[in-house]
Each structure stands twice: as structure tokens, then as C-alpha cells.
Image (tube, rainbow, N blue to C red):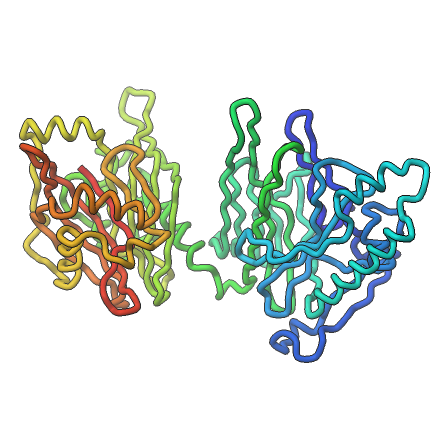
Length: 530
């Protein structure tokens, strides 16, 4: 069986990137030694005491370079730094199969795709030159010394790191990794092009989650496609941590993609809130339908819903205000562009998604319609729950402008209760003074427009558009605000009119505000509906 850090063969049609086999793992017939971290390194916890393990490797077993560099005792990777911030893995920088294979050690920043440092062992030019020495030993005295020097330097740099235990994944007959039990938990590596990897509890609840999207680069003549791929996982039992590596399959003549490394707690009590919130947000449309999910599993009692009709209902009446005219019409939703942000206080959050809603109308083959959802959530004794939400359907801008010019559209009142006056005032300042400074630099601010496909991410882009076309041109017809129990996150529902030459366009707006460090409400999310 190949070592846990092996980079799986990367194949597209007839082109296949086949990295060399990494250093062998400890097991039957192999000796293992341990180096203990230097005094004072790390936090001093029991988890740091295990240190770096070594496996005996023969110099003629591929990849040969590590055996030469480390005098036959190869450090077992992946290994984690004493403070848990870096993961050391073997990297394969070569642009194609070659013997000997170029190899290095990469120090990855956890929970990112950043390589902090690269420790070279055998570099690609050296591997190419060595491979050209056919019929002779490529391990010349000079190269042996270079490898030994680099190995010593790598070991010095890895002081304080501790080797992890590889997770042996269950696999399909095709070799594809499949859901694997880790004690009472399940690690699901996903599959296909979804790039979703989840750690779930025994009841199926999502504890940790990562998602990568497929992408392409290059020109029409030379396209490089990158498909998400679960690479491997390794555990640190003493610290109750799991380190997951997710990368991409790619063609041999394409630039190598980045590797994403995640550090997940194996303690269900330390589940990532974003994972739990994601599971709720992507199920919210299941509140409608014949077999509707119990609202109490997703939302607080009577959570307000803002709809296209510029009216406010609640989850108690979701069948009347939801996306389908009759409950039986709903046949499921496919979410996309899901984004979750947890507030600084950790007690509230906001999220948004686009969705394709399946409707099965009588005597028709059914159809899919586009919807958008925005939510504010609170942490309750039962877990995260939606406290308020907006479900809206996009309308084409040309049709909205035509109907507004014809006088067919008018703004409606959302009620006389303004609720939290400070939130209403914050929204008023947005209409007259523009996007606040903190919002304008938020990288995660999502703005969902009223038209199909209108979604922007980043406060800077939204601020430019709003300040140019909306600031000073908006009349607030009706507005109310609600602060969440934490007092640091709140939301606003507003009915507004945007002045155009000779006519006005009414919109419903769902806006989320969070208090900045100075205690002032700052916009963090906004959603428009015509």
C-alpha cells in the first residue's frame, strides 16, 4: 500500500501526471525512531511530546532522494508544527515523470493555500541531469553531499514538528476515496467535481466543512482545467485534530495548482460554526413542500420572512409566502454561491445563497426557477437557527424599468413599527451618505441585486456602484430594524424608491449590519428585490 502522503496520479484523458512514490510509511519490517522537540518548543502540552518519527527506506526505492538525504531514515510526513500553525508535507515540483524524481518539503500554513516555506531536497534541474546519466549511478559524491546537507538543514527546520497518523480511507473499486469512519465520526471526501469535504457526527450533523470550486486557466487553444480532489488526511490523536489536504487534478503541461490544508478539531463540541450554519442555510427552502422540514429545526419561532411581494411573513406561514404557490409544487432546491460569516461576538451570523428551485406544477413536466436567500442567524441552546430571512425571485431589469415607467409598480409599506431606531438610522445614512468606510473595505460583503445573476462580493465594488447610482437618489418609504439578542448584529427591512429621470423604481431591501470596533453599525450584507 502506498504511503499516506502520496500524490495520486493526476490524469486527464491520455495525459497523466504520475508523481513518484513518497518515502515508505512505518509498518511491518520497517524500523521507526522518534526525535523529541527541543526544550521550550511549542506549548509544552502532551501533544507535542511525540515528536518527529522516522521510517527506514532503502536508497534504491523510489523516491530515492529522501533516502539519500536522510541517510536511510526518512522523516514521516505529514507532520505538524508545535503550535499547530504549519503542516509539513513532501512536495513534487517536477513537470513530468522522471527518475530520480525531484522532491522537496513544503511547510503549509493551515486553513489556507499558502506555502510558508519550501525546503529543497532534489531540485528539478538536478533530477534531469541525474536522469541523463544512463547506465551509471546518478548519486555522484557531489550530489550525495548536497542531498545530505539539505537533509540536515530540513531536519533542523523541522525541530518541534510531530508526525501525524495517516488516515487510511475506504475506497471504491475504482480507487476513489469514499466516506470513512473515524471512531464515532465520518470523514466524507466528497467526489466528482464538487470539491466538498465534510466531517460529520454519528447523526449526520456537519462538524467541519471545506469546499473548493473547479476552475480553468489559459486560452481557447490551451485550456488547463483544474478539478477538486481530496488528497489525504492525517490525525493527531493527542491533540484531537485532523489535518485534511484538498488539491486539484491537472494536466501535466499545466501550472501546478495550490494545495489547501485544513486543521479540524475531532471534538464534536468544537464544531466549526460555519459548517453547521452552511447545513442550515442550504436546507432552508425545504421549509416548503409536502414533506416540509420542521421549521423548529432550522429557524427560531416565527422568524420573519421578507418576500418579493414587499410583505413580511414568518416561518409559521411559510406555505403561504414561500417560493411555490402550493406546497405540493416544491420539489427541492440546488444551492450555489453559499457564503457564511460569523459575527465577531460568535453569537450571531449572516449568510446568503443563490438557488435553483424545482417546481412540479399540475399537468406540466416541471421547471426550475431562480431564487435568492439571505439570512441572519443566532446561536441558541438547540444550535444555530435562522432569525430572519429574505426569499426573493430576480426580475429582469428591462421589464422592471418598463413597468415602472408605465406606472405599474409602487412601493408598499412594511408596517408602522420601526423597531430598532439605531438600525433604521444606519440604513438612512446609507441612502444619504453612501456606504460606510468599514463596509467599503470588507472583502466578504455580499450584495445581491434585483436582476438575474446580480451578485457581487467585496465592499469596494458595491460602494462604487451604490455611491455612483443610488446615494442621494433613494427615498425610504418604509423601514424597520431588528437587533439580534447579542446586540451587535441586526437587520433592516426597507421599502424604497430609486429616482430615475421621469419615474421611480420601487425595491424591497434586506440589509444586515454589524457593529464595528467603535460600536457603530456597519453594513455587512445587502439584498435587493424588485
